[in-house]
Length: 251
Length: 337
Image (cartoon, rainbow over all chains, first blue to last red):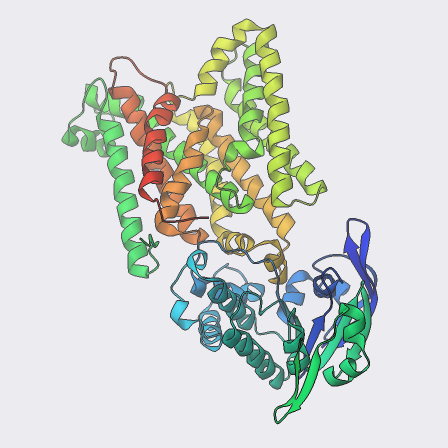
């Protein structure tokens, strides 16, 4: 559970986020959306203390983030940034580094760490690329490698920035299914998504940000009906009721 | 054509077995070859039997062993230093000189040559202090600006240029210092003794131990600053710590060998083709590769134009440079990043 109260943050004296209060609840997939530059990525980073806050409070599993060490935060919340490096290391080694927050002295991974990494690879559908070098993978495969690393971290909270970017339709849906199954285990999952229709269809809670402020937050259907999507993006997807529930589309 | 590094444990074992054999062979040749060639039997007798009064034993023990040890030490230290800077800065052009090590050592050496031309014993100490001082200045400036990769590189370039201008000023005002300084700038393994290597060896051993214990941190950093922070690593602080280790390694090497920057640039690239970027493989492989490369170049510089001797810095550039270019041409279509 991550709880933000009046969170303010920014870069080099320029405030991007102006007092956002929001909760990432266990068992739920919370999707953040909003136009470019509205502060979605900043919110994830500030929540975990990766960039400094300029105001407000952030609680991670009940403790103020400022009182926790970086390592302790990494044991409670996994974070997948938008900007992902691709050095020439194997996907298997990379998944193993998901255990980095648990590494003690001597600085060697234990048998349990290797097992956890292997399970994460399997779950992220990355076993067949486990022996390949990250530098030689396609965008989608690289994404799976990063997902495996986040899973190996085995945290109660997972925050992912654009986990579906560069992915084809099947893999986008696979990521959303993964998010659902992680939430089903009682974890709090927060995703930044660009695909508005995917967000409206698959989120448990939809948070719409605009200009560094929270415009609306709630069940996607209600947020849509209150008009927050139109106000934030300036365009409105249409919807049609099908036997699979509401489906959203653009004209 | 896919030029895959070896990822299996058996492949790694083979890689290190060949690297160790190459380094040992280069060391044996370095001890055996020269104006007087020593037969393998005499070489072994001298190494394991000590000084038995024979000419061969004296040549091996007093003329060549310090030099061979110096090459191993400087080659390993500079190559690991280069591998660390390249990984930490995510910049294939990075080398110890990128963080101001060469410029700092150069200025200290030039000042030493100008102010105390007779006290040559001071030069290694001055060079080490200069290298470390300049690198710490670069790291301090970059740290205040956030220690991102690009501020580190830019701070290094700025400080190096300022210090290089100071060197030029010193040798302009004191022309006599230029001769002594020129030897240092090119880099040479002549006139080494084992006792002179003791202090640099100690510094190198400590810095290598630190670097080898931080290989996971190095991998995590190479995934990007934000990923590293997300995994619980303070990226800026760890970059500064790893670069400080790189500066200590390069400083120790240049203190007795002069400005042999090229080993630090090319050795990591050569071994990276086989190890990839995984630090637990890359660092030890770089150490072995750097030692072998410097041993080979130093042996060539002593034997090719015997009885004349070429400073190793020159043969390194003339042999290492084309070798490196050949590797680049051969890997066409391989690595892209």
